[in-house]
Image 1 (spheres, rainbow over the protein chains, first blue to last red):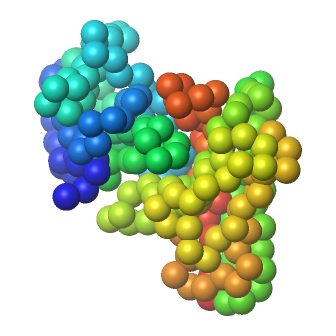
Image 2: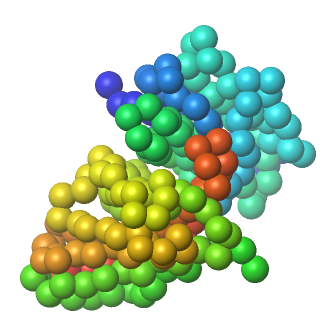
Image 3: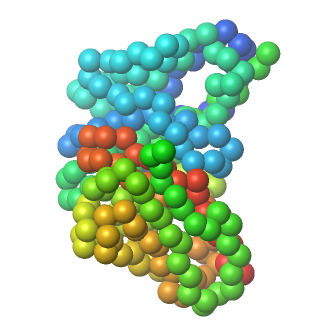
Length: 111
Length: 112
């Protein structure tokens, strides 16, 4: 089992749709969680940090469920410019300072 | 401007010819790390450093070396590159374990 698992997609949605991504992690000692966006083999860019209390930034909402060991990302009112690969990232301080990336979920938003 | 700077952006080399990819950050971050990204495998951690003179292996350290003599710099060294090290490499830094990573622009390496 991979340490961080994501549905690779692709997700094909029309403009204006709501789309949700989930990511599960296996290390219960994981400490911090993030969603990144990556465009066409460019560097990943931070989208949101993820907290147990949930956090929202405009059309984006992220949630962490520690009991079930998953994080989620909700995108409302999808735009063409949201087309990208979304990476969940889990950081743990157990046995070092490890960073584990999910394989990424590809999103295509169409007009 | 706060940034992580990697050089070069593109590099084509031959098997066995030593090379260094530089990484520098201007944010006074404690933590720096190197990753490689390959199709179907995602981003994988090569080495990381939690502070000056403190480095440790990630998931795929074989064939790579690093050093952290100064806080701002974290070069990646390939002593004897091989074709299976052809990949897209990213350097990143963060303030601490609870802070997000800031990535460099990437280095596309081809080893023939």
